[in-house]
Length: 163
Length: 92
Ligand SMILES: [Zn+2]
Image (cartoon, rainbow over all chains, first blue to last red; front, side, top):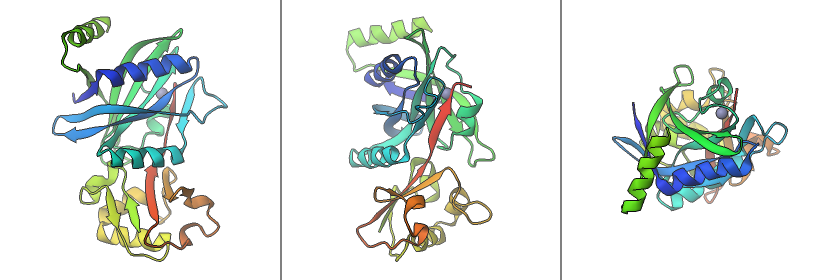
């Protein structure tokens, strides 16, 4: 299983975003760097959900917003490492729609289940494969990276305990 | 012009995130790009040679699909072309 490293601020922010937009789906991009062990995400960018017709069970990020996110990431020396969205009152598992609409091979798709307004499980799925034809989602281990202080380490432990 | 390559396609573009290309139109730029990096072709185009439905092309801040001349739109040195696969999903 590959590992997705998330800075604790990012982990907190994407889960809070899901609570904020509940009962609608939230979505956004994850920015970071890549090395042999996988993605290390240091920043996240909130995006608007353009599926206002069905925002409780669908999300879509406007391409122009992605263009701007990609440009901004590049200026900071970061890459788009993946995307996140929420599943209001649904498990944190990828759906058929998520799979059909996933095209960023090698990137991480992070899903947070938001139950009755409260963020519960957060899972990450790597879009593995090399083409549209052989793509597949592989669950990843999320490693929340503390900023080095003791209280943050404890916070990470408590996050693990909740799972 | 500068073509911005999205994360998933960089392995097929020599690891680069941006590529400088001299071209007069969007389609010329894409041709020149895929001539230099042939592996990109199947990721950008269908077997009939059309841009794949989930691949968005933005000339500066404009969706090429909605430009009057689409892929025949003229480009110059300062223009940027962003290749952006779409992002969407849902709960079921
Ligand atoms: Zn989903």
